[in-house]
Image 1 (cartoon, rainbow, N blue to C red):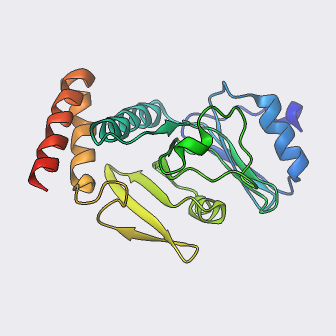
Image 2: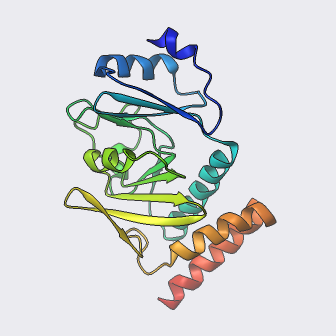
Length: 215
């Protein structure tokens, strides 16, 4: 299986689907491909998706991750970011690699752990996906029990919270109530690209504190 995969040349922005992949094959592929690779994977009931992100995708992922961490710092909330860690649950036959993810409520439980097993460990409190096109991703996150899922698509932020095993789009993040992030995170994402990261992050910190004072 791995030898066959290495023969695939997946252009940036494209993906392939492999059907009838057993759980053992999936785990072997994840292990042998390693963490330092350019592709992302998703596993949903024996179907394996392998996608190679575009450079813009990777840039947006890093910038938005920095903005989320800045939010948590200014609000003095501990966070344990785990980037694109592979999350798996054998019992549910699901696996996913978010573009970024954060342990917030469960930060103390996960802090310092080298390996996670979602059959016993909690899922990330907040997961981030950039330009999602796969129809299965929301279902995977829901089955794994991720409480909050952010999706950036076509420059817009969609905030979803898990209710009764399904995601419902909301205006305000439960982690950042009263902060109009749907409007302002896309604004600061674009501002980083025009004005530079450090300058924009400083401005973003001021904006956060203004919002805190107003509320």
